[in-house]
Image 1 (cartoon, rainbow, N blue to C red):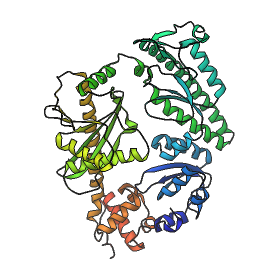
Image 2: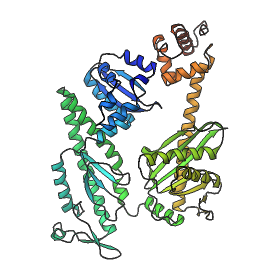
Image 3: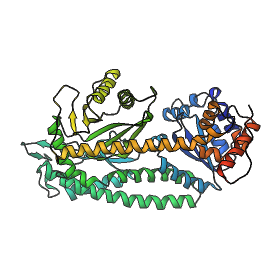
Image 4: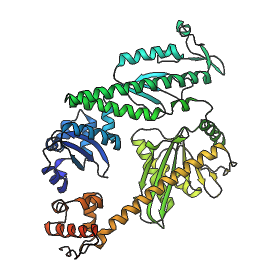
Length: 506
C-alpha cells in the first residue's frame, strides 16, 4: 500500500514511534497478525516499512513486498533490552504463527526429510520445500552432510528406501525394492509386501524423530550461547529454525500410528470409502456447519480431519458477509465459496471428501457454490442429523449406515467437532458484543463514533487501557470528547464512583 494512502491514524502512530527496543506486530485489514518482528530501535525499524517506494524497491523480494502491501496497522510492545526483545519475538511467533514469519522461515531453505504416505512404499526423500499436506516432514536440518550419513545408516538399519531407487511390483501382493547389489547389503529381505515394508518405515520414522529431538536440544544450546555473546542476528536465525523444528515435531508425534496398517482410523476410512463409493479412503475431510441464535450472530465453522483425526491447523471460522438475517442456505453457499476460492487462488489441493451439516437444501447450496466458482466439486455428502441420513448431490438414494458402523462414527465425530467449533465462535461473538455494549450507554456517542473506536482500538479492553491522548487520535474525536469518554469508561470500571460523566461534546 503506498504511503500516501495510509490512514491518518496510522500516520500518527508512525510519527510517535518510540526510539527503544521492542517487538512489533504487523496486521492486515482484518486485524490479523501477519508478521512479528523485533527491533533495537522501534522507530527506525517500523518506520522503514512505510517509506515511500519501499515496496517497489523490493521487486526482487516478492514475499517481503507482499507483506508490506498488506500492512494496515501495527501494535508495539516496548521492552528494556534487545535480548528481551529476541525472547519475546520468539514467544509471540510461536503463539500466533503469523503467515509471513512462517514463509520467511521456510525460505531459509534448510533440508527437510519428506515421507509420502500416499505412496505404496514410502521413501525418505530430501527436500527444501513443503510441497503438500499429505506427506510427513522431519526437520529442518542445518547440517546436510550429517543428515545424508544418517539416512544412509537408516537404510541399512531398517531396510527402507531413499530417493535413489524405484521399487518394482512383481506380483499382486509383493514388491522388489532393489534390482542391484544393494539388495544384499543390509540383510533385509528384498521382496516384501506393502504391510511388511510399512512396519520398517514406522520404525525408521520413530528413529528419525528421536534424531530430530537431539538436534533440537543442540540448537537451543547454540541459540542461548549466541544470545549471551550478543550475536542477536545469528541467535534470531537459530530461533527461527528451533520454532520450525518444534512445529514439525508436534505434527510428527503421530507418525507411528499413521503408518500402522490396521489402526482403527484406517479401518473407519476404508469402510467409509466402500460405503460412499469413493476411489480411495478419504484421508482429508472437511465439514461445514452454520450456527446462529434466531438469525443473529450468524457464523460458520470449517473443521478438517487428516487420517481420521482433527487437524486443528486447518480449522477456519467465518462471519457471514453477503447478507444480514437468517438463511442457512445462503450462508452455506457463501462460506463454501470463500473456502474453495481461496484454495484455488493458493493452488492448494481440495479435500478428498466435503461433509455438509444438513440435508438436500444445504448440500444443494454447497453445490451451487462450486457452480459459481466454475470448478468441479470434490466428493461431497450431507449428514442430516435427525436419522443420520447421508445425502448425495448427484441424485443417489439417501444412505443410512447401521449403528456402530466405523465410517458413520467417523462422520459423526467430524460433524460434532464442526458443531463445537461453530458454537464456540458464536459464544465468543456474543461475549464480545456484550462487552462492547457498554458504549451504548455513553451519552453523545452515536453509531459512527462507536464504530470508529472499535475499528481504531480493536476491542473494549484496549480502549479502556487507552489514555485521553490515545483516544483523541480516533477519527471524529478531539481532546474534549476523548476526555469525556475516558471519564465515562473510568466510572464503568469503578461502579462505586460518584458523579456522572459529562455528555460527549457534539
